[in-house]
Length: 298
Image (tube, rainbow, N blue to C red):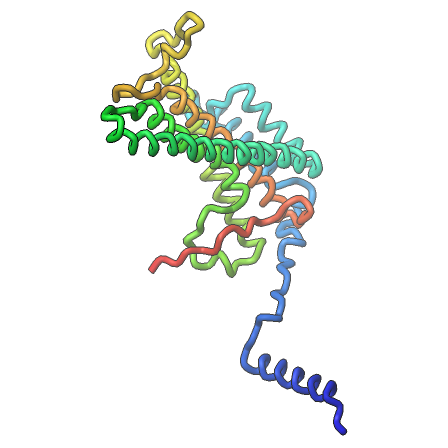
């Protein structure tokens, strides 16, 4: 009498063979990407790419300062900026120290993530009050909708976006619309992110933070003419007011734009450090955020 167990085994083997012939890949694991485990350039073994970028900027700034007598653009480098650039070069020679800096910057993103959750719940309860008061108006024959509550709702919602920018970059939740990203190797992704963040994104955010300092100070009451702050402890009276009646002042939420961009800037620095380690073959210090799948544009 034939063994039913052996027959079942033979049937399973036949099904596995048929599935393989039909091109089934459900049980086939994707080969791991090993392209980032060896450095693309030998110099990256000794110095992190961010150090090379900082050293290059120092050389260009020094030449521009000597050759041209201008106080604008790249030649206008303050003393504290020279110190930051020199410190960046020094840290790029110590991978563990540079990695610690990255972890500290990403700790800010983890903190803002928790703050966003709190603010999101605050938006929910504030909007609940707005909805309840709106539908109670016909029963009490009076407008009991509080204008400050509606203003608070949209300001809290704006705060979610401003505080969540850096965590969104850290987690890689920003949607990518390039069709090739998903098929690129980690080394190629790291090259693209490092170049774009270092030479395009970081300068833009640096200039934005500088411009927003004056914008935020004006929103909080600093006078444009002499640059003085109003006297007295009732600071809320000097905040920029809303153009609509019965609304909260808009000064604080406008000032938070500066905070959001500053956190955004710091997280981009952390991304540059992380992708630089991928280029250097130090995968223990850097990785590539997978994020969401790319979006097709039809």
